[in-house]
Image 1 (cartoon, rainbow, N blue to C red):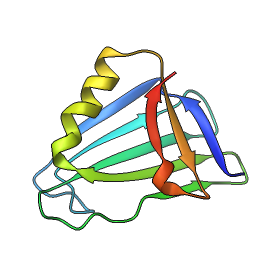
Image 2 (image 1 turned 45 degrees about the vertical axis):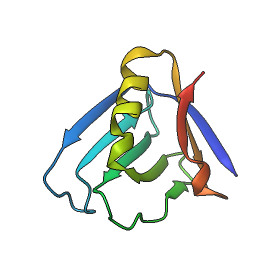
Image 3 (image 1 turned 90 degrees about the vertical axis):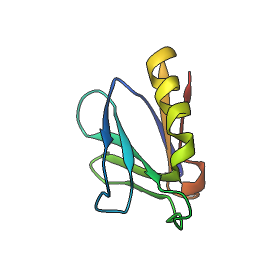
Length: 104
């Protein structure tokens, strides 16, 4: 499967000094029900090298996407989640650079 779309039903915001991936903040977006559907957005400090985005869709249907962005974009994504609805996530295994969240 090339990509999967799911509606973001809730999210978790974390502000950090330095996380396990070097991030200073993250937003984890979740879809409803099982199997698990999730896209994690990591915001990296200024001048940090951005890792490549990652995606996986398991045989059980579980979906996991990762995005790595500059910290300056944190407010944009938080604003989108707080002020727009519905929001959907795209997780793309063929081209993880297309991972995103967007209005539906």
